[in-house]
Amino acid sequence: MAGGYRYLDHVTDAYIEAYGESMEEAFSFAAKGTINVMFELNDIQAKSKFEFEVEGHDYSELLFNWLDRIILLIAIDNKVASNFNLKISKLGSKYQMTGYAMTESVDISKHGYKTEIKGITYHEMEILQESGLNKVRFILDL
Image (cartoon, rainbow, N blue to C red; front, side):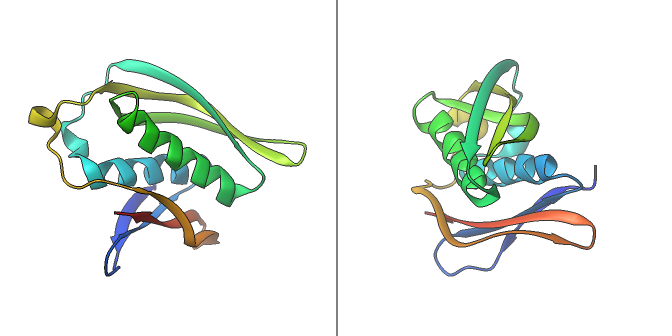
């Protein structure tokens, strides 16, 4: 796997670049980078499977809806994820992503707590290919 994520400089919010050999791998690392803003990703030992489906008219909307779903998984379902299995398909004029995440219940004493994410934004969101990698860049409003 050639993918990963990194935090880019931003004055007030979290600016993340995630990348991978496939768009699915880039989206997986986007979710990991998002979760790591709130919790210590390395402390998550997920054992329960959570299936999902998200759609978007383009990759930007798909990424927005995907990261929004990850944030809601934490806020509403009280679950945190660490491993993802994703598949993106084009269905007519839309993109659909299906798959599953391995999750466990949030435990502040185990996972820690870094900062709250208010939401994902479209501001400065980019979907691109560089150096043979699929990359996504996005800002999380903290």
